[in-house]
Image (cartoon, rainbow, N blue to C red; front, side):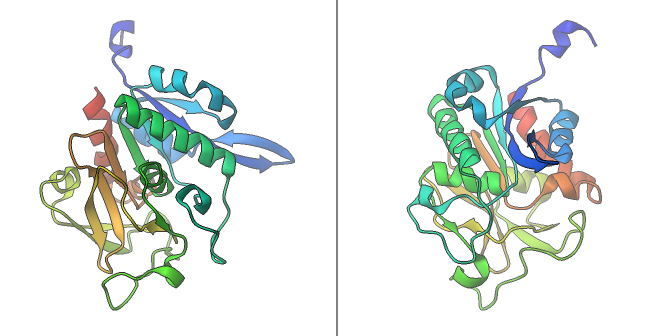
Length: 244
C-alpha cells in the first residue's frame, strides 16, 4: 500500500475512557472497538478528555466520530436528578463527548454510537434516558426482557425488530439476534432522529438521522458480538463506507 492510498482512509475520532490501574489513571479504548474501525478501513484517533479545549481541532481533522460503550451518562445533562439505581458515571467523559457530539452536529460531521455512545448522541440532541430500565421503564409491552445479560458478551440473547427502509434493514432485514449489556436506554428520542430498531418490549435498540446519514447508532455491542456473528462487522463497514 502506497502513501496515496493510506491518505484515503477516513480518520475516526474516538473519545477515550479513564481507568485507574496500579494507582495510575490511564486513558483507554477497548480493543474490540478499535478492531471494528480498522477492519472496516478507518484510522482511529484517541480523543482524551484533557483535550476538551481542542474540540474544534479534533472535529476538523476527523472525518467522523465514534462514541463507544462505557459508564452511565450523568442525568443532570438531560435535566434529571440521579436515580437510586443509576450506576457509575464519569463527568469528564460526559462533558467531552457531549461537546464533541454537538460540535459535530453543527458542522455536519458523521457520528456513530454504540450503547452509551448512542445514549450520548441522544442526550446531545435534547433527548432523555431511562436511568434504570428495571425500575423506570413504562413502555407499551406487558413485560421487560433482560437487557443486561448474564451470558458472555459474544453470545446473542434477544431479537430486535428492524424498521423497513433504514440502514440497519439493508444490513440485516426485519429481525436479528443481538447481545445486550445495558441498564439504561433512550427514553425521549432526540431532535432529528428516527427509531430504526426495538426489542420485543419496546426498548429502543437503534436510531439514525431522519434525513441523510450523519447519525447512526445501536444499543447492543456489535464489536463484542462479531466473534460469533461475522455479520456484526457490517455495522462498522456501513459507517466507514459512508465516509470513504
